[in-house]
Length: 253
Image (cartoon, rainbow, N blue to C red; front, side, top):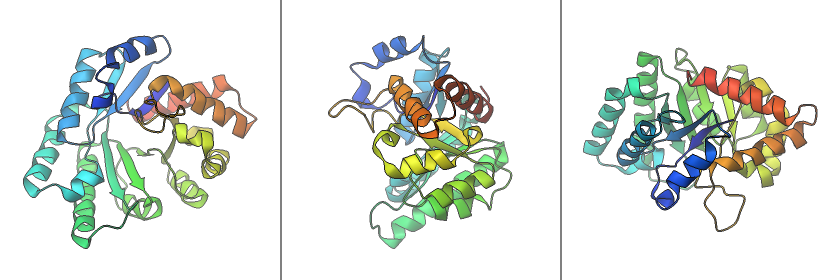
């Protein structure tokens, strides 16, 4: 298995991080840890250096930060990603977040940073991992402006079935997380998206199936079981093998 998106570098795992990674080694080919800010990019990269046999990293700039950080921090983070481009598997998570009402200047900063990072991905021939909460269809139209990005992953996709199918038509990947266990919308999307365009993740420590506990990569088995129950015509092993194959192709593993 491959968890294509989690945040083991986050402080929530300070007391159990090493144990979680050790307990995951028998189950996972790789776990892809995602940076979301200047500081978490550093932590994620250090984690991949500590556990190179299983942890890979992406460096990104979450739109919540991109939209609110001062210009000095924005420039420092973009430079950081460029300087580490040979040490990471993708640029992400990056994107847009329309999950709450935001002032116009914040939305403009989100868009400006998003475009700059997409240009960077084209320049360096890097895949991107997108956080586009409540902005899926809008982000898809923006992504189409950058046809030379090798692969695009819609992380923790929660958009409409039509947007998912439009993304698949472009050759992009839809990543399903553990929130698919309790969402009718996700069930519809799982039915619609071909296995060849599907990835699996946990977004740990978020979206835990167990109330009051941190999510963790091993819970990805529940996501695969959910896909198996929903699609019905494919087995757990088939889903596991195909999503791992997809991940290895996307992230050059």
